[in-house]
Image 1 (cartoon, helix red, strand yellow):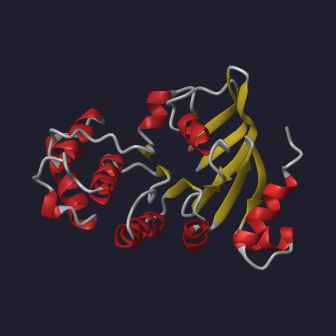
Image 2: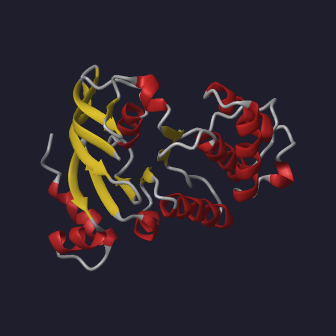
Image 3: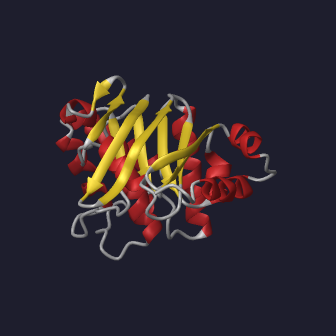
Length: 242
């Protein structure tokens, strides 16, 4: 489970987060939805221990993000940029992160073989990643994030820039993580993606949570028929917030 409590973050005079709070339960997909610059990526960076909040608290399975090494053992992270090493093969990229997490060689081989199979990486597993398509890089980055069998997965706009077939493949992967009982938290500004995947939606606008709940909750609250209309209405309610 992932918890954010009154997270605040400032960059000079810019308030990126102003009291963001929500809970992402196990066995569910929670989506952070918002326009560009709303604070989605900043929230994920704090939860993944890359950045410290100026105020507030965050917990992964009850462990504070102030204990980064303990938290990192329980999370798998797909950043906005995949950041895979171009001179290594797909398999070598995955193995490298497994060793960083302290996996012994026997378990490492088993995990790498398993992820290559389930993520359908086999046809390019032994190729250097320089020149990979965006979809191929994303699959390798997801495998890297899952190598140590984390219970919580944080994905920053996982399908951004992908074609239709690659997007469908990544969505299937995310659903499978949920079916395995994992806590999945991902950010997006694509309404169709949120609607297709999420059990719970957190709408962030101007560094604050403007609405949160199940899709049905948000539709009822805004009295709209579609999530797109509900999203627009929610953003309209924040226009006066400064």
